[in-house]
Length: 403
Image (cartoon, rainbow, N blue to C red; front, side, top):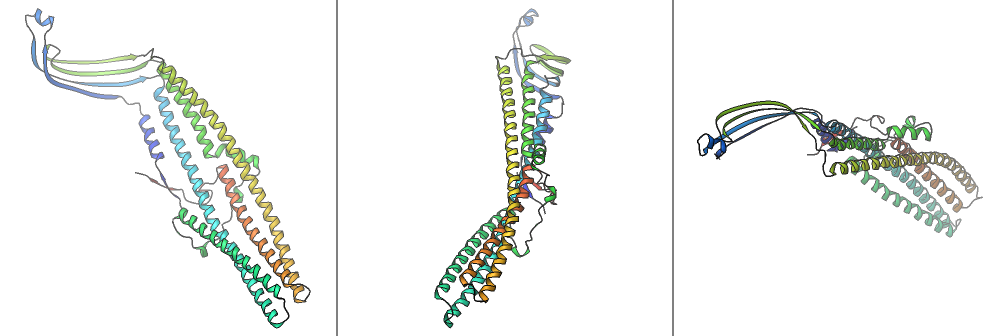
């Protein structure tokens, strides 16, 4: 099984990284051709009044940056970090989609099991109603018992109808997630990966601090802001470029004839005053850095809260399952005892029906709590950051790049 996902950020960030990585020189060719009129003192000294001619020229310039105040290095680091953030975002999305799929799958199973119990309750009440009706017809029953049996049957039908509505909603959700309708007969209850759970809540929080993709992405945001601050400060430093040029001119700038020129120079460019623009950029970058730190701390608190809530939900669900299992066992004993008393003529049919309804209600509550406990396992793994395809025995997601 694989998860198809659509993504655009990953390839974009990789392209950005490739663009920033190389420190290749820049090469440019310029050329011009046209008419030129020149009247200058040098021409007049030579006895010429002016020069009127067609001109043409071509030049090749190659510029290799040597140092720019660490701006380029910071840009490469930012590109790499943005690629990491995109990967973490994808990992977070994969876990969200996987949890959504697991929830949709379990909801169909949950509602199916609950409907089975509700229908069994309805069928038993229908049989009991017929028996009470036959007793009344024979003169050994009580009409009120028949009416009460009918009332309980209507309540059982209402519960079954409500559960069928929930099943339809669960099926619709399943279709939205899996793009196909579920074959309920083939669905099986998966075994929750309990072995992947941390030993305790403190261990879970420590794992989440290291592995939760949302928190890791927030930490990368701090690194990005730090590199952007370095890039902003680079304008305080001079820029060093090695510039090589070669040119060919013909009748250019008042000089008749052909001319060739070649040069290679070290060029220093230093904007030592920018009207306080550089200071403003550095101040803004520092403010962004502080904001990213605050966001990371807030994200850490949110992740800690999410893990604690998920763990508490897990513990509560496990306790409820144990208690409700005992409740089902007791309800079964009560129902069996009342049936025996009824057969001996020492118990009313209404009490038997009540004990049956209590048994079915206990079974419904138990099944509902059991599925909550199953989902709580996956919820803890999601909060920690360990609800990954490889953890669930699934293939890695298939990425389709949006055009």
